[in-house]
Length: 243
Image (tube, rainbow, N blue to C red; front, side):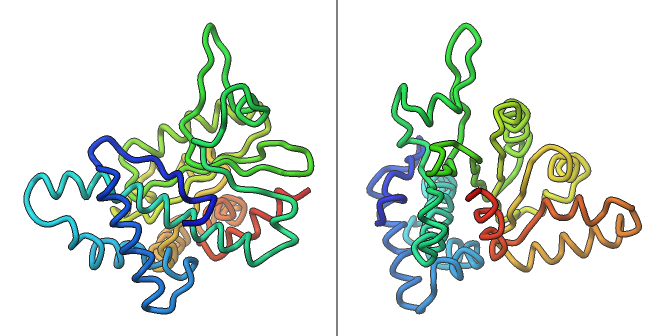
């Protein structure tokens, strides 16, 4: 694994050896099919459910382990794709870094920038932080989820808390259950979060089509739609954080 992606947190019901096996299976699939990790993230659901799921076996216990491990595997796949972007763009990697949340050591400058202090210290639940290396400043945090459920609302809460600190929040998802377009989630995408990245290009196109049909006549439609992007366009966001 690369240095950025070797610390993916293990969920409660996902044994380390199982998660490591799933990650190795994912890596082998990408290599065998001669994909880049940026290409693989666009097909995560197909690879995960159609290929990796088979190593977990069958039965209720296997299903539970898979549900727990799948989120961690998605986090890893996002990390590898982002790492690939930085590795292939020296000018970008000179100015920004992407760090896993678990690498924010206590009392470090970066961790302190995220910490909310009120009687005690509270650290937002973030998967990754984007750091402007020139100013040693956290400019954004990333949260990765395959399924939304209440998680987008949780991310919206942290967005409200971090905004006064000048830290943007990016939500990354496959939106496998097609939840982004519900009225509440649409509001969060357009009015609370800074960016929502859909890693499945087919799902992204369907979201755009649905919202264009419903809201395309709104005067602020293009402004609101700029907040939801496909993974291919995430480099534009990363470049914004270099200044």
